Length: 536
View (cartoon, rainbow, N blue to C red):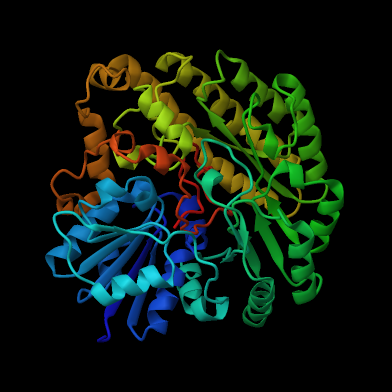
């Protein structure tokens, strides 16, 4: 095989001007694009890696003479990825899409890429490298039977890590992973069908020792969907490889694992931030190890989170709104009460979102005819909720969302959280809260639009499938010059493709591909309905 010139593009975010993104996005690079880059180099190819954080000209960052271009992207960045792919395909480059969007919408992605990858191991990659041929009008969908059993060591992908973190001017976080999949079965999550699989403990220890030789006191962001499932084994590895006080850690875990004895050990080993999921006050209690609901669950979770904050200075709880088991103001009022009695916590909110094939529950929403054809740019679990709520009219739902956002991110709420925080994390919480406060204005704008824009009102009420002008204008504004590079038909997709696929019952139970993406410190909350921040 001749040596190929290969580009690897990890799209962390589409063009943005947000201060938080400028500070943090370089730390949110995915691991899997770096893994693919390392594997391509092992195969003897010339590799150019770019982590696009939302700033600058992506086409200026990539070489123009690529033989093969791999892109990893969330669904929110699908139009961005489609435009870049179209630009390079016109120049003769073969393009490949991986990541959450490839997992969730493979049929649509195949219209604009030569290859669309699911699970990606060395065999899948080698097949693409050997063939590297155009496939048009529809690209090839290629996937391994399961996620890879091992990944290249940190030393092998180190230059790609440095290229990504160089785009964060102050805080620099190194992404690592010790396991794939999740033991929990939350029906709205992409990881619910991915078998839990720890990676090599020996390799993990070697990676930690390598990192200590590169950075004086590094911060590690663990990309595991649920860190600490095999708690003692992982902590034994960390304690054996890292002297006390030499490393700091951020991870997502579940409340059921965050017992006080575990917290003592986490604090001793430098864990500075934890991201547990609460999800709902009425369901999904397996991750918090409770059968309580409503106010009883609020009190129990608050007591535990306040206990966690005595050991770990930063805790962010994730919630999902719009689930079918919710109605009326109570879910939102309970969350306000939780914030009042847990003043040091940072709460992140997601709107229920159906990301194509990502989760088993999505098939149910599509069968019910409740999924809306929102353009991909709005599918980030914040800008739009593409599942019509079962128990709310849209104006009522957004009234509650706006009220909760104002309670959470008001100046008073931010100040109270700052006072009840300690160390340098209070400044990070301040920056994060100011960034999230923009969502209050955004949701309030959506609520006004429901009253003033008849086209939007008909669209969300499923009285019309015509894309309102306001959405197309926002896509054009976000993409800037790349908008003119969008291929024909890119703004519309078949939002019921999962339902229409002949093997939908098998797809609903099949394991989800894994592209490993940063969670730690990410501005977006862990999305509902499918696109985990650990996906490949």
